[in-house]
Length: 167
Image (cartoon, rainbow, N blue to C red; front, side, top):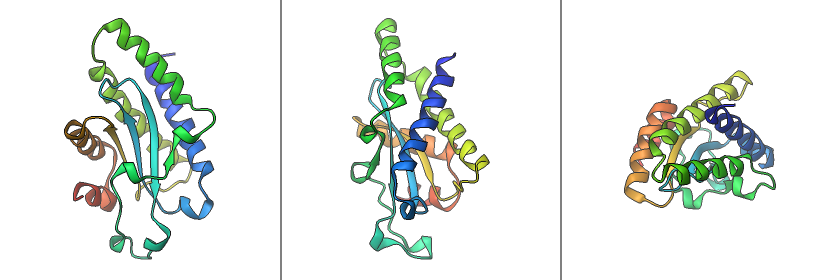
């Protein structure tokens, strides 16, 4: 199986497990999902956030969305079994073999995996219009923000994307 297919399956499986771990009332208020990687683009996990209980309003344009992922509450790091851990090991092995960065390979692959996740969720009746999906680099603020913006524009759309870009 190709590495990209392994990444896509792992992202989907871990996201669904993350969703399953959320309280049902929170699922309707999910607004952000980031695939988080490190500066080597080898270690990955998912993190998501839902609108704070006090912020929930019927008009979503009035909600104060928190785009600082360090404040986000739902992470695949808290799952007992994480498919993305296996992917990270494979990516680390490639990194060691290549003796250099794998960003050129992995960054577009991460974006495609989130695009596929969004499409799969929509096929299964989950509305993704109010979820901003993006890739971020955890340990490099400047490059991380650039990666977030580029990937969000490629994956997400509508009001939630505009809100994210305006943050």
